[in-house]
Length: 504
Image (cartoon, rainbow, N blue to C red; front, side, top):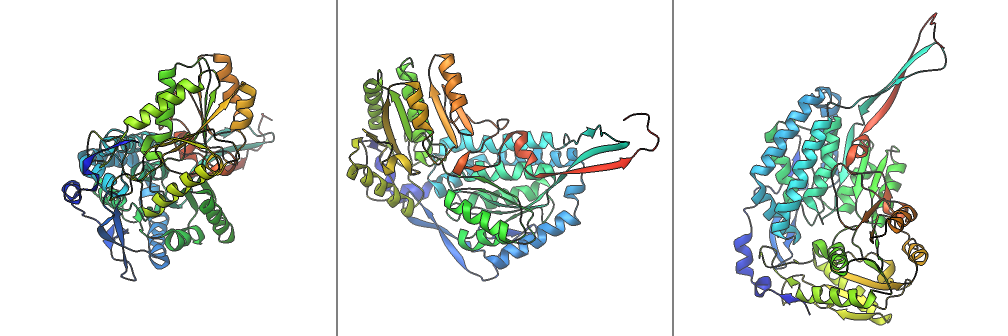
């Protein structure tokens, strides 16, 4: 079994690491306000299963207020009318303020989401500032094109902000997702109504506060805490929201598309579930492959859309790699995410914790071999051992459905052609990985796998300049890169006649 730190159920130790909770209300039109109903909901510390604080519960009426503020800010306010360089300057200030408050922000995501405090500081917070600076730098480089039309006409295109954006983000990367959505929308000149996941609202509210300090005008960025079935549904179906962007489950993505179509036919971009394959070929370096496989699956306790949960290993190195992975799993320290010796914190909440454990039971019942893990760690908190199954068949539930937790399925293959076929045998298409020293194999496999992101000899190698999104039931649209910016821009064509033009 995995090691676990003695402190994971120590409530008094946990409370020492809980930062002061400064913001718990809704943020609408530049002010923190109570919800219209006056209702609140509990946000839970997954380390202790105890309440951190009560947060205002927004509903349809609150979404409507936020949309009115965002609509006014778009139609009449300064943000879309500023020069791109002015918007960029404010976004750069926003990034500076995040860096000044990095410790506190990282602590909020660790307490609220069970994420490793050290990695929040090393990865999540820098991801936020990079996104703001990248898109802030792009804000004054939004250009149309001049068209050479076939008749006596002059034409050009304008790229204009799409308008009011509804953004619904998940709980696994509260900071990263906040800025993956808001940074390009702000750069484009849009206004935003954002609903953080009900499990992790605390950092989003803090970012709203910092946005105001940075000079983002009132009404441009609004944050409405609430449940998906009420606040999220209100955003998806609102007649005055011009676009919805969502990251989360395929099931909810379908509901958002339906609501968007039934309302004002607003465009939607969706980054949804995954069951990503990672293909390890016989020529791979065993130690490097083990590191890539382990990180690909167990990073962020398996709560990551691109988790390499289907690991296909060529038969020549299968037994060696299996042994290495079991050693790594057994050496993993599960415990309080503030402890620097800990590698894996708690799952997000009781529902997800129980869901993961039920998938582990499915794996056992269907005949997969449980190599290591599979159990709850400690007496308090949502901790689960890193779990590895071998002898997994492609038609088993653990090989087909997204578990979103620390559960790996190991499978053996003989030929490259077999591996490609099995990798593509899924309804998802978010990401994939290849580990090989053979350039021809890397090229062939990367061109053959139907997924939006393919990593060669690495995994989870994200960059703000690299577009990210899915094929098939993993969604459509792209976050990051200039493709991410274009999602928040409309293309308008302008044509005028040129009389007696010598050109045709």
